[in-house]
Image (cartoon, rainbow, N blue to C red; front, side):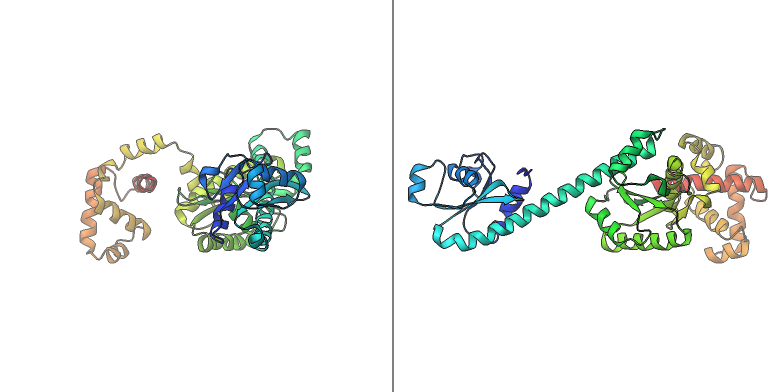
Length: 370
Protein backbone atom coordinates (compact mmCIF):
# COMPACT_ATOMS: atom_id res chain seq x y z
CA UNK A 1 0.00 0.00 0.00
CA UNK A 2 2.75 2.44 0.96
CA UNK A 3 6.10 2.39 -0.84
CA UNK A 4 9.17 4.27 0.30
CA UNK A 5 11.21 4.21 -2.88
CA UNK A 6 10.25 7.78 -3.70
CA UNK A 7 7.46 9.08 -1.51
CA UNK A 8 9.17 8.35 1.83
CA UNK A 9 12.22 10.38 0.87
CA UNK A 10 10.03 13.20 -0.43
CA UNK A 11 8.23 13.37 2.92
CA UNK A 12 11.46 13.44 4.92
CA UNK A 13 12.96 16.09 2.63
CA UNK A 14 9.91 18.31 3.03
CA UNK A 15 9.75 17.89 6.81
CA UNK A 16 13.47 18.60 7.21
CA UNK A 17 12.76 22.11 5.93
CA UNK A 18 10.18 22.66 8.66
CA UNK A 19 11.97 21.43 11.79
CA UNK A 20 15.57 21.05 12.95
CA UNK A 21 15.18 17.67 14.63
CA UNK A 22 16.14 14.42 12.93
CA UNK A 23 13.25 12.70 11.16
CA UNK A 24 12.79 9.13 10.00
CA UNK A 25 10.17 6.85 8.50
CA UNK A 26 10.09 3.10 9.06
CA UNK A 27 8.18 0.40 7.23
CA UNK A 28 5.84 -2.18 8.80
CA UNK A 29 8.80 -4.30 9.88
CA UNK A 30 10.39 -1.46 11.80
CA UNK A 31 13.23 -0.89 9.35
CA UNK A 32 14.16 2.72 8.62
CA UNK A 33 13.50 3.47 4.95
CA UNK A 34 13.93 7.25 4.86
CA UNK A 35 15.81 9.52 7.25
CA UNK A 36 17.53 12.88 7.49
CA UNK A 37 20.47 10.84 8.80
CA UNK A 38 21.39 8.68 5.81
CA UNK A 39 23.49 6.35 7.97
CA UNK A 40 20.33 5.10 9.73
CA UNK A 41 18.61 3.92 6.55
CA UNK A 42 17.91 0.15 6.58
CA UNK A 43 18.64 -0.06 10.34
CA UNK A 44 16.11 -1.74 12.62
CA UNK A 45 14.11 0.49 15.01
CA UNK A 46 12.51 -1.68 17.67
CA UNK A 47 10.53 1.19 19.16
CA UNK A 48 8.88 1.90 15.82
CA UNK A 49 7.87 -1.75 15.45
CA UNK A 50 6.19 -1.71 18.89
CA UNK A 51 4.47 1.59 18.07
CA UNK A 52 3.10 0.13 14.84
CA UNK A 53 1.91 -3.12 16.40
CA UNK A 54 0.25 -1.41 19.36
CA UNK A 55 -0.90 1.59 17.29
CA UNK A 56 0.22 4.09 19.91
CA UNK A 57 2.62 6.96 20.34
CA UNK A 58 5.71 6.01 22.33
CA UNK A 59 8.26 8.32 23.95
CA UNK A 60 11.83 7.16 23.46
CA UNK A 61 13.39 8.02 26.85
CA UNK A 62 16.61 6.85 28.45
CA UNK A 63 14.78 3.73 29.56
CA UNK A 64 13.72 2.78 26.02
CA UNK A 65 17.17 3.64 24.69
CA UNK A 66 18.68 1.17 27.13
CA UNK A 67 16.26 -1.66 26.37
CA UNK A 68 15.30 -1.30 22.70
CA UNK A 69 17.45 -1.72 19.63
CA UNK A 70 18.19 1.11 17.21
CA UNK A 71 16.40 3.90 19.07
CA UNK A 72 17.38 7.44 20.01
CA UNK A 73 15.74 9.92 22.37
CA UNK A 74 12.60 11.26 20.78
CA UNK A 75 9.08 10.16 19.86
CA UNK A 76 7.62 7.60 17.44
CA UNK A 77 4.12 7.90 16.03
CA UNK A 78 2.23 5.27 14.00
CA UNK A 79 0.93 6.46 10.64
CA UNK A 80 -2.59 5.11 10.24
CA UNK A 81 -4.38 5.44 6.90
CA UNK A 82 -8.01 4.31 6.58
CA UNK A 83 -7.72 2.40 9.86
CA UNK A 84 -4.57 0.53 8.84
CA UNK A 85 -1.13 1.22 10.36
CA UNK A 86 1.27 1.42 7.42
CA UNK A 87 4.44 3.10 8.72
CA UNK A 88 5.98 4.96 11.65
CA UNK A 89 7.18 8.54 11.92
CA UNK A 90 10.10 9.15 14.25
CA UNK A 91 11.38 12.52 15.49
CA UNK A 92 14.42 12.98 17.74
CA UNK A 93 14.51 15.35 20.71
CA UNK A 94 13.08 15.66 24.21
CA UNK A 95 9.79 13.72 23.97
CA UNK A 96 7.68 16.05 26.14
CA UNK A 97 8.90 19.16 24.31
CA UNK A 98 8.48 17.90 20.76
CA UNK A 99 5.15 16.04 21.17
CA UNK A 100 2.86 18.98 20.24
CA UNK A 101 4.91 19.67 17.12
CA UNK A 102 5.17 15.95 16.37
CA UNK A 103 1.37 15.54 16.42
CA UNK A 104 1.02 18.37 13.94
CA UNK A 105 3.70 16.89 11.70
CA UNK A 106 2.02 13.48 11.89
CA UNK A 107 -1.17 15.03 10.56
CA UNK A 108 0.75 16.65 7.70
CA UNK A 109 2.39 13.32 6.84
CA UNK A 110 -0.97 11.50 6.88
CA UNK A 111 -2.46 14.07 4.52
CA UNK A 112 0.59 13.84 2.29
CA UNK A 113 0.30 10.06 2.07
CA UNK A 114 -3.47 10.12 1.56
CA UNK A 115 -3.02 12.53 -1.31
CA UNK A 116 -0.25 10.39 -2.83
CA UNK A 117 -2.34 7.24 -2.56
CA UNK A 118 -5.30 9.01 -4.15
CA UNK A 119 -3.09 10.14 -7.03
CA UNK A 120 -1.79 6.61 -7.42
CA UNK A 121 -5.33 5.21 -7.68
CA UNK A 122 -6.27 7.87 -10.22
CA UNK A 123 -3.13 7.19 -12.26
CA UNK A 124 -3.91 3.48 -12.31
CA UNK A 125 -7.39 4.26 -13.64
CA UNK A 126 -5.88 6.50 -16.30
CA UNK A 127 -3.46 3.77 -17.39
CA UNK A 128 -6.29 1.23 -17.58
CA UNK A 129 -8.13 3.63 -19.88
CA UNK A 130 -4.98 4.19 -21.96
CA UNK A 131 -4.49 0.44 -22.45
CA UNK A 132 -8.16 -0.01 -23.32
CA UNK A 133 -8.18 2.77 -25.92
CA UNK A 134 -4.93 1.44 -27.41
CA UNK A 135 -6.55 -1.98 -27.85
CA UNK A 136 -9.70 -0.31 -29.18
CA UNK A 137 -7.82 1.48 -31.94
CA UNK A 138 -5.36 -1.29 -32.83
CA UNK A 139 -7.36 -4.52 -32.56
CA UNK A 140 -9.26 -5.84 -35.55
CA UNK A 141 -12.26 -7.30 -33.75
CA UNK A 142 -14.47 -5.83 -31.03
CA UNK A 143 -15.71 -9.00 -29.34
CA UNK A 144 -17.60 -9.68 -26.13
CA UNK A 145 -14.45 -9.42 -24.03
CA UNK A 146 -13.84 -5.95 -25.40
CA UNK A 147 -17.36 -4.89 -24.46
CA UNK A 148 -16.93 -6.38 -20.99
CA UNK A 149 -13.77 -4.31 -20.42
CA UNK A 150 -15.65 -1.24 -21.60
CA UNK A 151 -18.46 -1.94 -19.14
CA UNK A 152 -16.01 -2.37 -16.26
CA UNK A 153 -14.46 1.00 -17.11
CA UNK A 154 -17.92 2.55 -17.40
CA UNK A 155 -17.55 3.38 -21.10
CA UNK A 156 -20.46 3.18 -23.53
CA UNK A 157 -18.33 2.64 -26.64
CA UNK A 158 -21.23 3.20 -29.03
CA UNK A 159 -21.32 6.87 -27.97
CA UNK A 160 -17.88 7.61 -29.39
CA UNK A 161 -17.73 8.56 -33.05
CA UNK A 162 -14.61 10.63 -33.70
CA UNK A 163 -10.92 10.90 -32.91
CA UNK A 164 -8.91 14.09 -32.44
CA UNK A 165 -5.17 14.14 -31.93
CA UNK A 166 -3.05 16.86 -30.29
CA UNK A 167 0.72 16.68 -30.79
CA UNK A 168 3.52 18.81 -29.37
CA UNK A 169 5.55 20.53 -32.10
CA UNK A 170 8.71 20.11 -30.04
CA UNK A 171 9.71 16.43 -29.84
CA UNK A 172 11.30 17.00 -26.43
CA UNK A 173 8.00 18.12 -24.89
CA UNK A 174 5.89 15.53 -23.10
CA UNK A 175 2.40 15.50 -21.60
CA UNK A 176 2.01 14.15 -18.07
CA UNK A 177 -1.01 12.39 -16.64
CA UNK A 178 -1.61 15.44 -14.46
CA UNK A 179 -1.61 17.77 -17.46
CA UNK A 180 -4.09 15.59 -19.35
CA UNK A 181 -6.30 15.46 -16.24
CA UNK A 182 -6.12 19.25 -16.03
CA UNK A 183 -7.15 19.63 -19.67
CA UNK A 184 -10.00 17.20 -19.20
CA UNK A 185 -11.35 19.21 -16.28
CA UNK A 186 -11.13 22.50 -18.21
CA UNK A 187 -12.34 21.44 -21.66
CA UNK A 188 -15.78 22.36 -22.99
CA UNK A 189 -15.67 20.03 -25.97
CA UNK A 190 -18.23 17.61 -24.56
CA UNK A 191 -19.16 16.35 -21.06
CA UNK A 192 -18.44 12.73 -22.08
CA UNK A 193 -15.13 13.30 -23.85
CA UNK A 194 -12.30 10.82 -23.17
CA UNK A 195 -8.76 12.20 -23.19
CA UNK A 196 -5.57 10.15 -22.82
CA UNK A 197 -1.85 10.33 -23.58
CA UNK A 198 -0.89 8.67 -26.84
CA UNK A 199 2.82 8.36 -26.40
CA UNK A 200 4.61 11.07 -24.44
CA UNK A 201 4.11 13.95 -26.84
CA UNK A 202 0.53 13.34 -27.95
CA UNK A 203 -2.97 13.54 -26.51
CA UNK A 204 -5.76 11.49 -28.06
CA UNK A 205 -9.36 12.63 -27.68
CA UNK A 206 -12.40 10.40 -28.18
CA UNK A 207 -15.54 12.37 -28.93
CA UNK A 208 -19.25 11.60 -29.05
CA UNK A 209 -21.22 13.04 -31.96
CA UNK A 210 -21.05 16.85 -31.84
CA UNK A 211 -21.23 20.00 -33.93
CA UNK A 212 -17.98 20.37 -35.88
CA UNK A 213 -17.85 24.14 -35.58
CA UNK A 214 -18.14 23.83 -31.80
CA UNK A 215 -15.43 21.18 -31.90
CA UNK A 216 -13.04 23.46 -33.74
CA UNK A 217 -13.74 26.47 -31.50
CA UNK A 218 -13.37 24.54 -28.25
CA UNK A 219 -10.29 22.69 -29.49
CA UNK A 220 -8.68 26.06 -30.21
CA UNK A 221 -9.30 26.96 -26.55
CA UNK A 222 -7.64 23.71 -25.47
CA UNK A 223 -4.58 24.45 -27.63
CA UNK A 224 -4.41 27.97 -26.24
CA UNK A 225 -4.40 26.59 -22.70
CA UNK A 226 -1.67 24.10 -23.64
CA UNK A 227 0.43 26.93 -25.02
CA UNK A 228 -0.10 29.45 -22.22
CA UNK A 229 -0.23 27.23 -19.14
CA UNK A 230 1.92 24.29 -20.21
CA UNK A 231 4.28 26.24 -22.46
CA UNK A 232 3.79 23.72 -25.28
CA UNK A 233 3.03 24.65 -28.89
CA UNK A 234 0.87 21.93 -30.37
CA UNK A 235 -0.80 20.89 -33.62
CA UNK A 236 -4.21 19.22 -33.86
CA UNK A 237 -5.87 17.00 -36.44
CA UNK A 238 -9.45 15.74 -36.53
CA UNK A 239 -10.66 12.52 -38.14
CA UNK A 240 -14.12 12.00 -39.57
CA UNK A 241 -17.04 10.71 -37.50
CA UNK A 242 -17.89 7.02 -37.83
CA UNK A 243 -19.13 4.06 -35.78
CA UNK A 244 -17.24 2.94 -32.67
CA UNK A 245 -15.89 -0.22 -34.33
CA UNK A 246 -14.38 1.84 -37.15
CA UNK A 247 -12.66 4.43 -34.98
CA UNK A 248 -9.29 3.15 -36.16
CA UNK A 249 -10.03 4.85 -39.48
CA UNK A 250 -10.87 8.10 -37.72
CA UNK A 251 -7.62 7.80 -35.74
CA UNK A 252 -5.54 7.26 -38.88
CA UNK A 253 -7.22 10.28 -40.45
CA UNK A 254 -6.51 12.37 -37.36
CA UNK A 255 -2.82 11.39 -37.59
CA UNK A 256 -2.63 12.51 -41.22
CA UNK A 257 -4.43 15.75 -40.43
CA UNK A 258 -2.07 16.40 -37.51
CA UNK A 259 0.97 16.07 -39.77
CA UNK A 260 -0.49 18.77 -42.03
CA UNK A 261 -1.45 20.85 -38.98
CA UNK A 262 2.21 20.95 -37.94
CA UNK A 263 3.04 22.77 -41.15
CA UNK A 264 -0.02 25.00 -41.45
CA UNK A 265 -0.02 25.84 -37.71
CA UNK A 266 -3.80 25.53 -37.48
CA UNK A 267 -6.36 22.86 -36.67
CA UNK A 268 -6.92 20.59 -39.67
CA UNK A 269 -9.94 18.38 -40.39
CA UNK A 270 -9.30 15.23 -42.37
CA UNK A 271 -11.91 16.16 -44.95
CA UNK A 272 -9.82 19.23 -45.82
CA UNK A 273 -6.98 17.02 -47.03
CA UNK A 274 -6.87 16.69 -50.77
CA UNK A 275 -3.48 17.31 -52.30
CA UNK A 276 -1.83 16.79 -48.91
CA UNK A 277 -3.36 13.31 -48.71
CA UNK A 278 -1.63 12.37 -51.96
CA UNK A 279 1.70 13.84 -50.86
CA UNK A 280 1.74 12.07 -47.49
CA UNK A 281 0.95 8.72 -49.09
CA UNK A 282 4.27 8.81 -50.97
CA UNK A 283 7.26 7.13 -49.31
CA UNK A 284 10.28 9.28 -48.49
CA UNK A 285 12.39 7.44 -51.07
CA UNK A 286 9.89 8.29 -53.82
CA UNK A 287 9.91 11.98 -52.86
CA UNK A 288 13.69 12.09 -52.89
CA UNK A 289 13.83 10.38 -56.28
CA UNK A 290 11.26 12.84 -57.63
CA UNK A 291 13.40 15.80 -56.54
CA UNK A 292 16.44 14.24 -58.20
CA UNK A 293 14.52 13.92 -61.49
CA UNK A 294 13.14 17.45 -61.43
CA UNK A 295 14.68 20.36 -59.52
CA UNK A 296 17.73 18.81 -57.85
CA UNK A 297 20.05 21.38 -59.57
CA UNK A 298 18.26 24.13 -57.62
CA UNK A 299 19.05 22.69 -54.19
CA UNK A 300 22.24 24.73 -53.98
CA UNK A 301 20.55 27.85 -55.39
CA UNK A 302 18.94 29.40 -52.29
CA UNK A 303 18.03 32.64 -54.07
CA UNK A 304 16.27 30.88 -56.93
CA UNK A 305 14.34 28.65 -54.54
CA UNK A 306 13.21 31.69 -52.56
CA UNK A 307 12.15 33.46 -55.76
CA UNK A 308 10.11 30.41 -56.78
CA UNK A 309 8.38 30.28 -53.40
CA UNK A 310 7.31 33.90 -53.70
CA UNK A 311 6.32 33.38 -57.35
CA UNK A 312 4.01 30.51 -56.41
CA UNK A 313 2.67 32.42 -53.38
CA UNK A 314 1.73 35.26 -55.76
CA UNK A 315 0.06 32.86 -58.22
CA UNK A 316 2.85 33.28 -60.76
CA UNK A 317 2.21 37.00 -61.13
CA UNK A 318 5.45 38.55 -62.43
CA UNK A 319 4.52 42.04 -61.26
CA UNK A 320 3.46 41.06 -57.73
CA UNK A 321 6.42 38.73 -57.31
CA UNK A 322 8.90 41.41 -58.43
CA UNK A 323 7.35 43.87 -55.97
CA UNK A 324 7.55 41.39 -53.11
CA UNK A 325 11.17 40.63 -53.92
CA UNK A 326 12.01 44.31 -54.48
CA UNK A 327 13.55 43.59 -57.88
CA UNK A 328 12.77 44.58 -61.47
CA UNK A 329 10.52 42.34 -63.55
CA UNK A 330 13.38 41.81 -65.98
CA UNK A 331 15.56 40.53 -63.15
CA UNK A 332 12.82 38.10 -62.14
CA UNK A 333 12.42 37.00 -65.73
CA UNK A 334 16.17 36.35 -65.95
CA UNK A 335 16.10 34.27 -62.78
CA UNK A 336 13.17 32.18 -64.00
CA UNK A 337 15.08 31.58 -67.22
CA UNK A 338 17.96 30.32 -65.11
CA UNK A 339 15.55 27.91 -63.42
CA UNK A 340 14.61 26.60 -66.85
CA UNK A 341 18.27 26.22 -67.85
CA UNK A 342 19.22 24.32 -64.70
CA UNK A 343 16.19 22.00 -64.58
CA UNK A 344 15.16 21.66 -68.22
CA UNK A 345 11.61 22.51 -67.14
CA UNK A 346 9.65 25.40 -68.63
CA UNK A 347 7.96 27.97 -66.39
CA UNK A 348 5.51 28.54 -69.25
CA UNK A 349 4.32 24.95 -69.42
CA UNK A 350 1.64 24.09 -66.88
CA UNK A 351 2.80 20.49 -66.48
CA UNK A 352 6.40 21.59 -65.90
CA UNK A 353 5.24 24.29 -63.48
CA UNK A 354 3.41 21.61 -61.50
CA UNK A 355 6.57 19.47 -61.40
CA UNK A 356 8.60 22.44 -60.13
CA UNK A 357 5.97 23.20 -57.50
CA UNK A 358 5.84 19.58 -56.31
CA UNK A 359 9.62 19.33 -56.17
CA UNK A 360 9.76 22.55 -54.15
CA UNK A 361 7.23 21.16 -51.68
CA UNK A 362 9.32 18.02 -51.19
CA UNK A 363 12.49 20.04 -50.66
CA UNK A 364 10.81 22.31 -48.11
CA UNK A 365 9.25 19.35 -46.32
CA UNK A 366 12.62 17.59 -46.10
CA UNK A 367 14.26 20.75 -44.73
CA UNK A 368 11.55 21.14 -42.09
CA UNK A 369 12.25 17.64 -40.76
CA UNK A 370 16.00 18.20 -40.35
